[in-house]
Image (tube, rainbow, N blue to C red; front, side):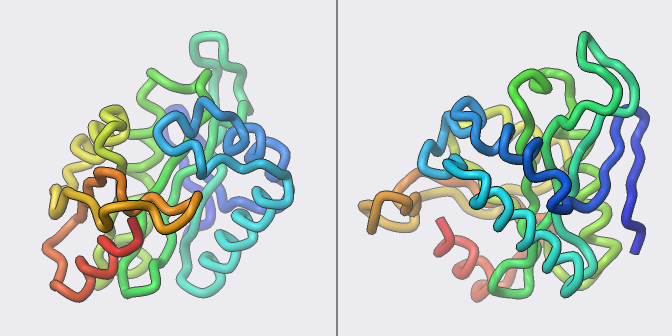
Length: 195
Protein backbone atom coordinates (compact mmCIF):
# COMPACT_ATOMS: atom_id res chain seq x y z
CA UNK A 1 0.00 0.00 0.00
CA UNK A 2 1.21 3.48 -0.82
CA UNK A 3 2.42 5.24 2.33
CA UNK A 4 2.34 8.75 0.90
CA UNK A 5 -0.45 10.54 -0.91
CA UNK A 6 -0.32 13.87 -2.72
CA UNK A 7 -3.06 16.18 -3.85
CA UNK A 8 -2.62 19.51 -5.57
CA UNK A 9 -2.21 21.23 -2.20
CA UNK A 10 -1.62 18.50 0.39
CA UNK A 11 0.78 15.78 1.39
CA UNK A 12 -0.56 12.93 3.52
CA UNK A 13 1.80 10.43 5.14
CA UNK A 14 1.24 7.98 8.00
CA UNK A 15 1.36 9.50 11.46
CA UNK A 16 4.44 8.69 13.54
CA UNK A 17 5.56 9.79 16.97
CA UNK A 18 7.62 12.49 15.23
CA UNK A 19 4.28 14.25 14.70
CA UNK A 20 3.20 14.19 18.35
CA UNK A 21 3.80 17.88 19.14
CA UNK A 22 1.95 19.11 16.03
CA UNK A 23 -0.78 16.51 16.52
CA UNK A 24 -1.26 17.54 20.15
CA UNK A 25 -1.41 21.21 19.14
CA UNK A 26 -4.45 20.37 16.98
CA UNK A 27 -6.09 17.73 19.18
CA UNK A 28 -5.48 19.69 22.37
CA UNK A 29 -7.01 22.90 21.00
CA UNK A 30 -10.50 23.34 22.52
CA UNK A 31 -11.70 25.03 19.32
CA UNK A 32 -11.29 21.74 17.44
CA UNK A 33 -13.60 20.06 19.99
CA UNK A 34 -16.36 22.68 20.04
CA UNK A 35 -19.03 20.03 19.40
CA UNK A 36 -17.54 17.38 21.71
CA UNK A 37 -15.42 19.00 24.45
CA UNK A 38 -14.82 15.70 26.25
CA UNK A 39 -12.76 14.45 23.28
CA UNK A 40 -10.04 17.07 23.66
CA UNK A 41 -6.56 15.71 24.35
CA UNK A 42 -5.40 17.08 27.68
CA UNK A 43 -1.88 15.63 27.57
CA UNK A 44 0.86 14.98 25.07
CA UNK A 45 0.74 11.33 26.18
CA UNK A 46 -2.88 11.04 25.10
CA UNK A 47 -1.91 12.30 21.64
CA UNK A 48 1.03 9.88 21.52
CA UNK A 49 -1.30 6.96 22.33
CA UNK A 50 -3.67 8.01 19.53
CA UNK A 51 -0.75 8.08 17.08
CA UNK A 52 0.40 4.65 18.30
CA UNK A 53 -3.11 3.27 17.61
CA UNK A 54 -2.89 4.69 14.08
CA UNK A 55 0.54 3.13 13.59
CA UNK A 56 -0.88 -0.23 14.72
CA UNK A 57 -3.78 0.20 12.26
CA UNK A 58 -1.27 0.68 9.44
CA UNK A 59 0.54 -2.51 10.49
CA UNK A 60 -2.59 -4.61 11.00
CA UNK A 61 -4.87 -3.34 8.24
CA UNK A 62 -2.66 -1.48 5.77
CA UNK A 63 -4.03 1.98 6.52
CA UNK A 64 -4.65 4.34 9.42
CA UNK A 65 -4.49 8.08 9.98
CA UNK A 66 -2.12 10.40 8.19
CA UNK A 67 -0.46 13.70 8.96
CA UNK A 68 -1.79 16.32 6.56
CA UNK A 69 0.84 18.88 5.54
CA UNK A 70 0.49 21.83 3.19
CA UNK A 71 2.62 21.47 0.03
CA UNK A 72 2.50 25.11 -1.09
CA UNK A 73 1.59 28.35 0.72
CA UNK A 74 -2.14 29.08 0.94
CA UNK A 75 -3.61 32.31 2.36
CA UNK A 76 -0.86 32.98 4.90
CA UNK A 77 -0.26 29.31 5.73
CA UNK A 78 3.33 28.35 4.91
CA UNK A 79 4.37 25.32 2.91
CA UNK A 80 5.15 22.48 5.30
CA UNK A 81 2.49 23.54 7.84
CA UNK A 82 0.98 20.61 9.76
CA UNK A 83 -2.74 21.17 9.19
CA UNK A 84 -4.15 18.16 11.03
CA UNK A 85 -4.87 14.52 10.32
CA UNK A 86 -7.14 12.45 8.12
CA UNK A 87 -7.53 8.73 7.63
CA UNK A 88 -9.52 5.69 8.61
CA UNK A 89 -9.38 3.25 11.50
CA UNK A 90 -10.82 -0.24 11.65
CA UNK A 91 -13.70 -0.50 14.11
CA UNK A 92 -14.44 -3.48 16.36
CA UNK A 93 -16.46 -4.86 13.44
CA UNK A 94 -15.32 -5.21 9.85
CA UNK A 95 -15.82 -1.54 8.94
CA UNK A 96 -13.57 1.47 8.57
CA UNK A 97 -14.27 4.69 10.46
CA UNK A 98 -13.29 7.72 8.38
CA UNK A 99 -12.07 10.68 10.40
CA UNK A 100 -10.33 14.05 10.10
CA UNK A 101 -9.47 16.98 12.35
CA UNK A 102 -7.80 20.22 11.35
CA UNK A 103 -6.29 23.21 13.12
CA UNK A 104 -8.64 26.22 13.19
CA UNK A 105 -6.31 28.26 10.99
CA UNK A 106 -6.82 25.61 8.27
CA UNK A 107 -10.63 25.81 8.31
CA UNK A 108 -12.55 27.19 5.38
CA UNK A 109 -10.09 26.20 2.66
CA UNK A 110 -11.58 22.83 1.66
CA UNK A 111 -8.64 20.91 3.14
CA UNK A 112 -10.90 18.50 5.06
CA UNK A 113 -12.75 17.46 1.93
CA UNK A 114 -9.51 17.16 -0.06
CA UNK A 115 -7.78 15.03 2.60
CA UNK A 116 -10.86 12.95 3.45
CA UNK A 117 -11.30 12.08 -0.23
CA UNK A 118 -7.77 10.67 -0.26
CA UNK A 119 -8.43 8.75 2.97
CA UNK A 120 -11.68 7.32 1.60
CA UNK A 121 -9.97 6.17 -1.60
CA UNK A 122 -7.07 4.64 0.35
CA UNK A 123 -9.37 2.73 2.72
CA UNK A 124 -11.35 1.39 -0.24
CA UNK A 125 -8.18 0.38 -2.10
CA UNK A 126 -6.68 -1.28 0.97
CA UNK A 127 -9.74 -3.41 1.77
CA UNK A 128 -12.33 -3.09 -1.03
CA UNK A 129 -14.68 -5.54 0.69
CA UNK A 130 -14.85 -3.46 3.88
CA UNK A 131 -17.42 -0.66 4.18
CA UNK A 132 -16.25 2.84 5.06
CA UNK A 133 -18.38 4.58 7.68
CA UNK A 134 -18.20 8.01 9.27
CA UNK A 135 -19.87 9.19 12.48
CA UNK A 136 -20.58 12.87 13.01
CA UNK A 137 -22.48 14.93 15.54
CA UNK A 138 -25.60 16.42 13.97
CA UNK A 139 -24.65 19.85 15.39
CA UNK A 140 -21.47 19.88 13.27
CA UNK A 141 -22.75 20.99 9.83
CA UNK A 142 -19.25 21.61 8.42
CA UNK A 143 -18.31 17.96 8.96
CA UNK A 144 -21.65 16.78 7.58
CA UNK A 145 -20.98 18.80 4.40
CA UNK A 146 -17.59 17.12 3.98
CA UNK A 147 -19.20 13.66 4.09
CA UNK A 148 -21.93 14.72 1.66
CA UNK A 149 -19.31 16.13 -0.76
CA UNK A 150 -17.54 12.76 -0.66
CA UNK A 151 -20.73 11.08 -1.85
CA UNK A 152 -21.29 9.06 1.31
CA UNK A 153 -24.89 8.21 2.13
CA UNK A 154 -26.66 8.94 5.40
CA UNK A 155 -27.57 5.49 6.77
CA UNK A 156 -28.74 6.44 10.29
CA UNK A 157 -29.38 9.39 12.55
CA UNK A 158 -30.45 9.51 16.17
CA UNK A 159 -29.14 8.86 19.67
CA UNK A 160 -27.77 5.60 21.05
CA UNK A 161 -28.87 6.19 24.65
CA UNK A 162 -31.17 8.47 26.63
CA UNK A 163 -28.46 9.74 28.97
CA UNK A 164 -24.65 9.63 29.20
CA UNK A 165 -23.19 6.66 31.06
CA UNK A 166 -20.23 8.76 32.24
CA UNK A 167 -18.37 12.01 31.64
CA UNK A 168 -16.83 10.87 28.32
CA UNK A 169 -19.90 9.07 26.98
CA UNK A 170 -21.45 10.74 23.94
CA UNK A 171 -24.07 8.14 23.04
CA UNK A 172 -26.87 10.51 24.14
CA UNK A 173 -25.89 13.15 21.57
CA UNK A 174 -27.63 13.35 18.18
CA UNK A 175 -25.39 11.60 15.66
CA UNK A 176 -25.41 10.86 11.98
CA UNK A 177 -23.78 7.83 10.41
CA UNK A 178 -22.68 7.92 6.78
CA UNK A 179 -21.36 5.00 4.72
CA UNK A 180 -20.08 4.26 1.25
CA UNK A 181 -22.53 1.36 0.86
CA UNK A 182 -25.49 -0.27 2.57
CA UNK A 183 -24.54 -1.81 5.93
CA UNK A 184 -25.86 -5.10 7.21
CA UNK A 185 -27.89 -4.77 10.41
CA UNK A 186 -25.16 -6.21 12.67
CA UNK A 187 -22.57 -3.73 11.39
CA UNK A 188 -24.96 -0.80 11.57
CA UNK A 189 -25.98 -1.63 15.14
CA UNK A 190 -22.33 -1.96 16.18
CA UNK A 191 -21.51 1.46 14.70
CA UNK A 192 -24.58 3.03 16.34
CA UNK A 193 -23.51 1.62 19.71
CA UNK A 194 -20.20 3.48 19.47
CA UNK A 195 -21.98 6.81 19.84
